Length: 451
Image (cartoon, rainbow, N blue to C red; front, side, top):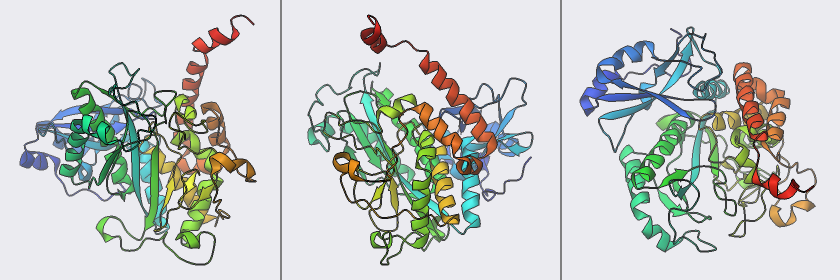
């Protein structure tokens, strides 16, 4: 079995850990190329064998680019990340690292992220990330809002809606607090039926696992109460889309050993005036250099492109970026730098793969650090109203096919993400685009029937 060089071997014995906590089953989990979670339910008596040799999956059936002729995909549980499910405490959810033929699968999203973690560590950088997941509470068929009274034209932070949906938000919040995530605020967002919940930022791999579990948890709680929770970027056409803003910083160590934020600085330069060090400046430059290339991983669905670059919604703003620019505390740009040695990438949406999204952000930013990329001056304007005044502000890709092409053309980014991953990802996503392109829509009937 391949030796893990990227994360320290766990000191946790899952069988003993489970016995101590009354766990009877383990959901050994991995996330596929398109972001779906795959799992096997392993009884307590079998988890020691799985921890040693992996839980077996057929990679072809599990959403990776393998054929039925390939051998078993063995998912090695990462015991340090095991979560006892708060609403079903006899089950533990544990993410794993897929292995095939004694080597870590280079196309498995969690392994792609772990490679970026290792690459960053070689530069003395240990990334932490905070996320702002937005989701919509819909009817079970997904065609309308679950809360029929949520109809205000500007519903953001609406107090009455919070009380009507308090039972949903409270339950999720209590689970996060029980898990020790540090949930610190929850709010009704800009769209009717849209919610956001925030918790403490953490090491990038840990946060990716938490985000995966969060989506699982939110969907469960919504279904329990007769609703459907959707992270779809644009579930209802007239309303603001579901973003997944990512706040990034780099530190001198992982976990509680981290003492110094390496992105924090203060000098008389365009980025220094916004609280970024030289390292932070170059990382920001990398995000801008590769803004087009990283879009299709941060915005991976056909529906994603109905959110970015969209016109104003019913509330008066899309809150999504349109072009590749940065500014200070200004939410109309691709990257917002609010101070404190961090930057917010506003590109990702709710469809983003929890592992691939931070991986491609790191890949772009690390290349910026290596090449000392310069992001230039901040553009302190309202990009929605005055964006036409900005020179050299490339637009974001307009659809998924454009996004795939921009990623494929960005050979620095594809090399950093890995050849095997890139081949598998592009194959899956091009197939998805072809399937979409052959779908007959009502728009075609209404606009071209009589041509």
